[in-house]
Image (cartoon, rainbow over all chains, first blue to last red; front, side, top):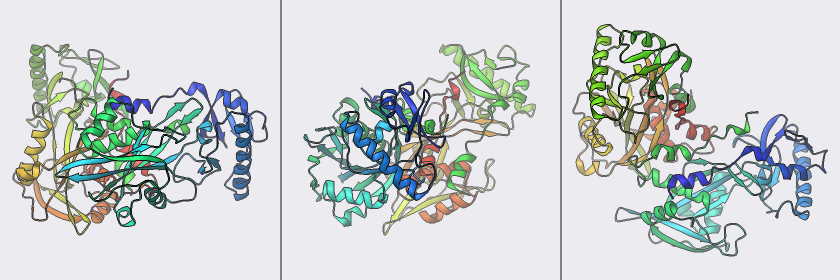
Length: 293
Length: 293
């Protein structure tokens, strides 16, 4: 296995398995053919045709459409959970939009978003320590009882970005909840870039964006999980983390990308390495399949 | 003006102005139609047709072809300088290839490379100082007598990568020559990524790659130019450098991209900024126009 394989794992999809999901002729998501069939009982909301699924709500930025549309979508999703077409809902609301700076057209339950191929935004933080000019990275092990990716390795702090909270407030909240990072250290974290990827899963498509952050921590800081999502934290030499990413599937797949980006930015993956440019570019996949028709 | 405008400045080209330059059916460069006409007197070397220019030398990795081909190309370029079709030669040899890890098919004079649309690799280093948690960036002003971009602002150290020298040795050499960086500081620089761009110029095409490096310097270090290429160095607050990049054309165009990358990686350009993802992606343009036919 190679770093590039890890990027490819997160960039596998076949759009022929999907119909585009449109609002006002704008492509805003992708729906598997079987899921499109399951939307046919609601023709006032979803116009399912051979070539697309048109979402007939939220047809402008009108606030009542936003409310009513989000509510209608939520109700349908609850029916689809009962019918076994959606595994579960999450409770957190995600904005429906394709560009971060756009206003949300609707809200959708976080767990339902991939069924509609709606883009989600997340924030991932690499916490690291410098000792004697060597870099050590904090690695989380996800709880074995977690619904998604139990037991997999993870970044020190990572989370989705729900609707209605700023990037700064959300990453600070995640730092507190997931790793008990005190406020004086939270103030030191800073954004370092973004990663885009698109992966087909059994139930849908994840054309997602991760905003990445670095936080250099003092040796004295020991992360403690507050919310039960993490089983343990380990501070590992950068070489060991790199080897785990490159040679194993122990990390949650998208976390591999966040670490590869860290390894590039901190000079651990060097330009002499074969395929360096492919790695650099592979972390920023084009996402224009939302706009084209 | 905006950061994105600065990326666009370095990514303007119209391939209809060019014919592909091929070796063994592999697209290895792009030649302006007028320049292709100027190559017709050497039909044993250049097969100029309606749709392409085929380079009939270096047809395999054979060492004698490499030598003979490079020599033939060099002689033709000297004729073209005499004829006024190429402004001047540089003396440094660049490898002819499209991927960094490929062996060179031929060598070409650095100043001639853009006429053939041959990819060039460079190395750019941002030297910076941290004072009271604020970042200051060293900015070079190019000599007014320099042949290219006289008087423009530049990164602390930047240079093309000639044939036959490693990345590590070349950046160390440039650090010594351009800024008198002592070896104990050179050891601290590290690679942080790469930027790809493609820009059409009057005489050709530059589909180039810049490997980027960071070097945190102590306050006590003052750069001194050894080779006369830089007129002065100034240590400016990151905010001021950002403003110069965003609002003026004072920097040499491709240096703007190196600084935008620095601003993103060091948290100065933040994801809340409109078009953040476009900036992140814009620094890594696809370069597959070499392989496709």
